[in-house]
Image (tube, rainbow, N blue to C red; front, side):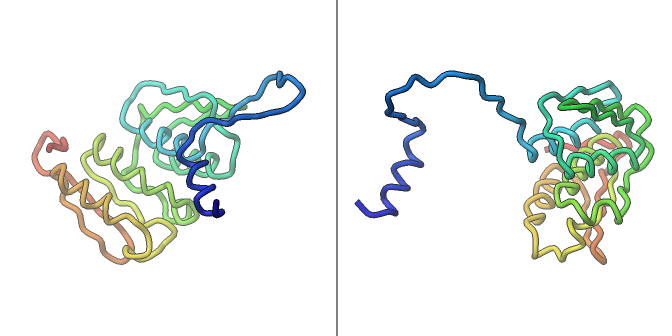
Length: 169
């Protein structure tokens, strides 16, 4: 069996078989997933109610997203593995470039800001050009939901038509 086929079999089989002479026992704490937590934090922009996320890893990117949300007017409290958000006083649809530039996941703010405020103005992740990161699919999705989207000078501007300021589609 080649190494490639052995790896493929391991990927296809979701079970782990351990053969040994000792019984395995103990406790294993599985930490939360950073990328999931970052997306869930931006989803907190959609409501004016308090949102509590638990099992959130204590990482630099989580703190960075907290700073971005705070700059938008969100109350953010991070303690241990818990993050509590309250976007009742969401005041801005434009996260600051200096905070967004260092966190690629910050682009996920655009959908929530658009859904809540009817407009968003978000720098491209990492200050990159549109072709360098897969934001094209995000933009395509926003347009499919009825948003007007433009990209100029590294800034994605999106708005919703009509007086109700609601996405459709």
